[in-house]
Image 1 (cartoon, rainbow, N blue to C red):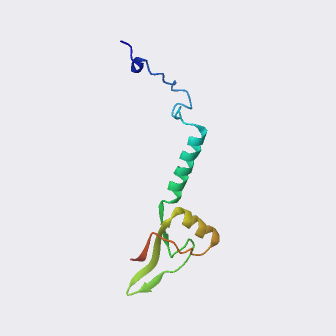
Image 2: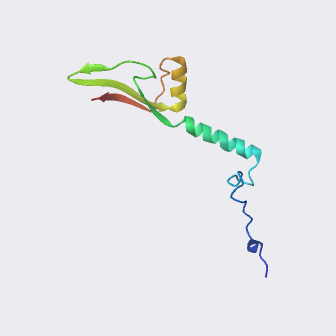
Length: 98
């Protein structure tokens, strides 16, 4: 008896640059997958000292140097880098003393 699963699997040659692409994925599906990847990448956490990039806020107290920090999404870090001040959104915050 013949089964549709008995057919040999056709694999592209190793020299084919498109061998890792999903053959059944439509162009719309590729766009959606790309956008989901970008959103996930921009949501990754980034530690930022002093609240925003480029700020100088180290404090010396009790023989230790302390600086506030925030853990915020990469998208907000990029916005703060361009704008030059704290936007005010963070996953968490605290003080880092050495």
